[in-house]
Image (cartoon, rainbow, N blue to C red):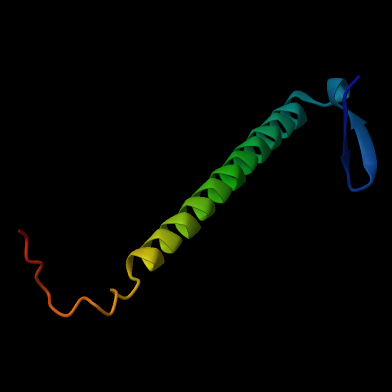
Length: 74
């Protein structure tokens, strides 16, 4: 049988009242959503760091031989 521990006391899920069982199921749902959002946050933080690094690299000073704001072709 499955059980949950609340305030250091174990309760068998099958023996909970219907109301308590509903609250326990809601708690599980919220916990699963929280874990999903934490994983999504980690992905977004990784993307943020990656984009910040790409921006930093694109802002590198031009080489000293470049003296104007136009490029002459041919």
